[in-house]
Picture 1 (cartoon, helix red, strand yellow):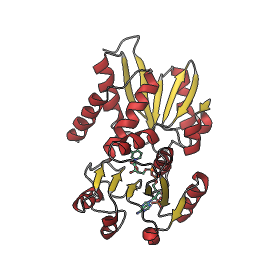
Picture 2: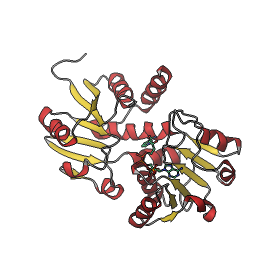
Picture 3: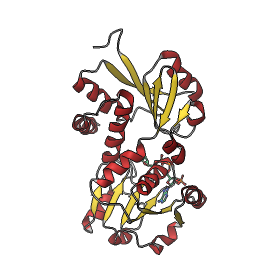
Length: 271
Ligand code: NAP
């Protein structure tokens, strides 16, 4: 029940109506009997919204598209990992000071490590946007070697230079003998769910394929990869684990991951 002592959390984005984070976090609060709510904030002006976190005493917020980079200079402190990635997806309000961090990379790492070892492995990452950068950071933290490609070659080259990995062009993806493929582009998301980010023939070479897209959960990329015998990791795993880490940063206690997993599944079924 909402009362005078209810703590308020939320998500800043535009649009945010599609977000599964409210379902995941509110289910977690309810399961643990925490007097808190998590609401979507469709942001009109980011600087004013960030002032609003302070002004209204919100306890913490998630940050999503298109604000993960733009929010950085508006915060009081940003941890070194989020700075290295260049994106913040979590803000915690500690007595009026706003601390930014990034849990996308931890979500990606936890999802990957449940299915594969990364140390010394060669990983091809498609997409050099904010999600691609978080994934590259995760693989590096676990001792993997990364090649990155993006439809915008200059973007892949910039990421490669900043994060000390190798850029490839889309025409030249066979130049690396990677056996893990990660799609960090929006290709394959509904309504374009028949689209593939790479030619299907290329999939023969990968032992593990992870897709960050989670609408649909079983993307065409994952289906084609599974047909060819690859182990597949869907985008819901990363979403779940980044949300779990976020819950821990918000409240300083372990997240009820199974409750959050169930909430995601239920919310998706309702769509
Ligand atoms: P973004 O900033 O738009 O970056 C995506 C990049 O991929 C763009 O530079 C885009 O280039 C490029 N691209 C498009 N098609 C490509 C192709 N066939 N091959 C290589 N590169 C291609 O998006 P983002 O924020 O990084 O997010 C990417 C995806 O990850 C989204 O679908 C998002 O929903 C998902 N995501 C999932 C999670 C999760 O927890 N599962 C977390 C974060 C993000 P152009 O701009 O030229 O098209």
